[in-house]
Image (cartoon, rainbow, N blue to C red; front, side, top):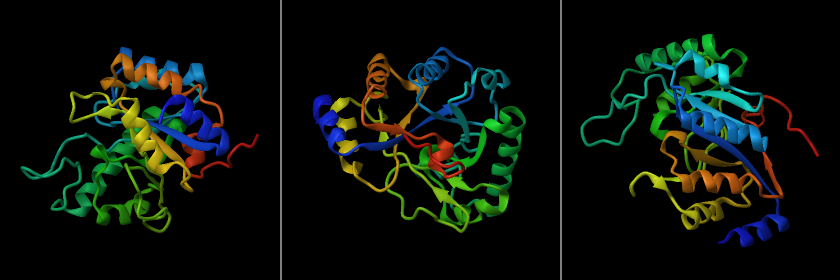
Length: 239
């Protein structure tokens, strides 16, 4: 698929997108750039912030189109040797994991205020089903990982809205994945009855990734949802 083919496809069937950017914690040039990109194009940004170590000055930069999601608590890999990275390994006591999430949420709330949504975006997009089932008991009503979701409501009172297109090639130099790969991932989910999520990591972007996003945000026949809309905290705007 090319840009022209994508535009033709969207003209026939408009799409609904949303945007999540992960690993925010410190004020940096890439962070400022991702915020400016959102503001310049008026595209809502769901900024997933790591609570532990988050710079309070970061929240002073957030404009009206930015919402804050909770990105774990410390982004520390607790998996056993050889296991896939996760902050929430299967062997960890459930109470400990929930306490860590609660502590992270409390710290973020103190800095982000009303910008913070009750949504958890777990680091490495991995979290055990036992933890997921208990998230509503600690005030989390939204979950966002990557790829196909098994259910829109994995637990009573918990809505899951995932991302589907990651623009970073993590196993190939941590650079822009390339237009072909990005469009291939998009083609697999176009037409789905759910918002299509774009996943970015501002600190990892090369110039090709920034250029791709700049063009993506100019597409016609696309409606960009805010995180609040995607997780049904507000009624979608019409028109």
